[in-house]
Image (spheres, rainbow, N blue to C red):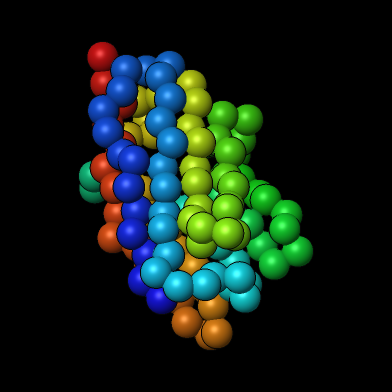
Length: 114
C-alpha cells in the first residue's frame, strides 16, 4: 500500500483546509491511522489518530479545530482543519500501521499567513 497526501495550500489565519490521503490499496485492516506534521526546524509531531476500535484522538493543540475521518469505500483519510493558526503551518503527513508495517505518505504543505 502507498499513501498519497493532497489538499495542502496557503490560507489566511482563521481559514480552513481539508487534507486527503488516498491509499493505493485497502487499509481496512489497519491498526492505527494517523496524521503528523513537521514545521521548519522542528521535530515531526503527532496530530491525530483513528485507532482500530474507531476512536479518534487529537493533540491538544488541534482539538476542537481539526476533524479526522475516513472513507473506507474509497480507502481515503481526511483531515478537516478549521480556524487555522500560523502555528499550524507545516508539512502534513498521513501514516498507516498495517500488518506490522508503518507506511507514510509523502507530505503536503500547509501555509498559514496573512
